[in-house]
Image 1 (cartoon, rainbow, N blue to C red):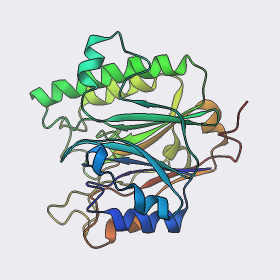
Image 2: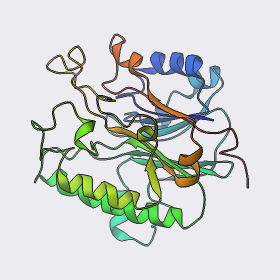
Image 3: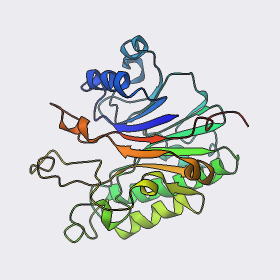
Image 4: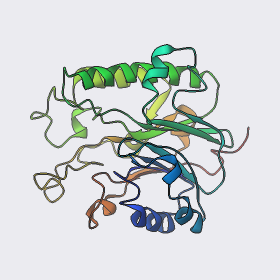
Length: 270
């Protein structure tokens, strides 16, 4: 089973690239972030034409997440609904379109677009930490259900210094601050493991390159797009890799897709 995550930075602007990528890579599920399109304008027809269907939670110009799959997904949940309905803070934080999940067989796929945070100490940074705290409660309740979980998305956090090209320069900055990294580790707890690091423990792997300062040409990037797996999935995963080729196309997203290969029975009912 092949599951991918990709911040496309506007689905309609990158639609042809997404359709071509689906035809070439043939994932079972593609998790999109920053779709930037309201639900009634979501481009279902071009995806259907190549054998995929989508469920989406979007808004105009900002945010937006979607699950694009070959087979229909069960028990689709939008935002923090389904777990934290009685949590007033979760209801407020869930208003932005950043969370969607669905089940394929017994496998729960959780797709996230974590807030950027703007700058350390800013109001947006405080929002990001509060959102991560809420996510931690949500994930803990999800894990209590006993379903294998594949949690993917644009986390807007480089978990370690090896996940950014110049750790000394960006030490303490947003997306690399101690508080963000610690908040992410709380979300992961003891049950979720970094699928990419199982196969690529060394540094020098990026999934995001800023549009500015020739970052792509100079290969100055960050690893912000992650795949986290519960232990049963982690132990039997076959591969996890970053598709850098997409970032080199004309008018690309600033993010590249990240793909995880799971064993064939990962989504089977147990």
